[in-house]
Amino acid sequence: MFWFKLIRDFISILREGQTPAQVAWGFALGSILGLSPMLTLQGVLVWLIILIIDVNLSAALVALTVFSLVAFLLDPVFHWFGFQVLVNVDTLQSLWTSLYNAPIAPLTRFNNTVVMGSFVCALLLFLPVYFGMKRFVVAYRATVGARVEKWKVYQVMKRSSLIQWYQKLRDFGG
Image 1: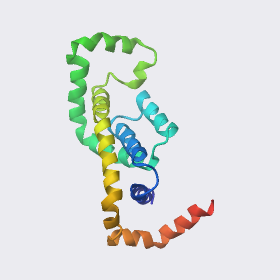
Image 2: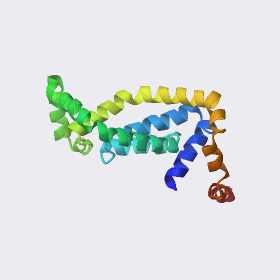
Image 3: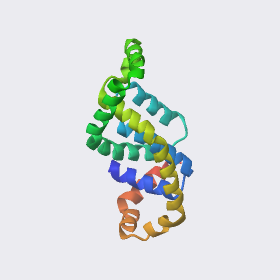
């Protein structure tokens, strides 16, 4: 039920609601969480950013889910990339040594090759994901949304008694 509601909310967000920029920010921040491990200091900081600024939480959760599945498949690539950054870039060796000796920096788990590679890749993909999602939301609202509403799957979901009951319950509080 949670995933069904999440997808339904995401489709409704694509149609209306928050601005395309807010949806895109939520999706881009969720992609960072999905690509890199969440149980690190940088994961906590990204969650705080999502909760503090006005971004779309449903978009962040959808991106977290999608990019987590992709990240699982890309772990060997992340390992290779993290190894290159941690070991083969000689100019950064003193930075890694000083960070490792700092009191809070080890909470980032930066010395793990997969963590480093996935976080750097997530940062590199952040702006392309943001601008791509923003463009997708604008295009969806302009043309695709009307076509999706004609799909039988969408009409069945919209007329479902469970969904109608949920909407009444949700709107009951005000």
